[in-house]
Length: 72
Image 1 (cartoon, rainbow, N blue to C red):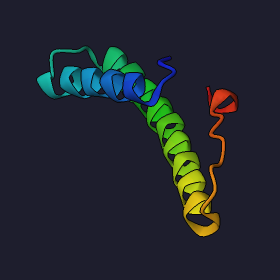
Image 2: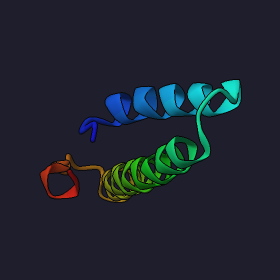
Image 3: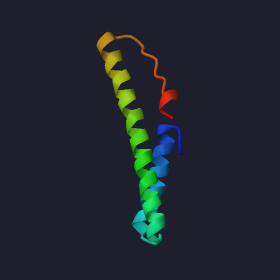
Image 4: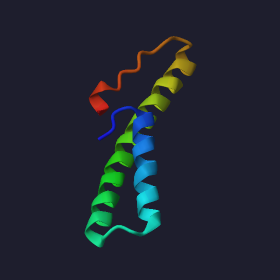
């Protein structure tokens, strides 16, 4: 699975394109869909964490470290 947020978005784009083309056998399409859902959930967690850090920074006017290593 892709680790950075940008890599996750790229992987999702690839999966969506493959599914939209409609050339995949059903089993492969289901596998791709499930993988896409896993990636989307992981990316959503990273985005939520980044939002929380930004919110805290805005509220405290201080730098807050962003460590996403536990999300990969």
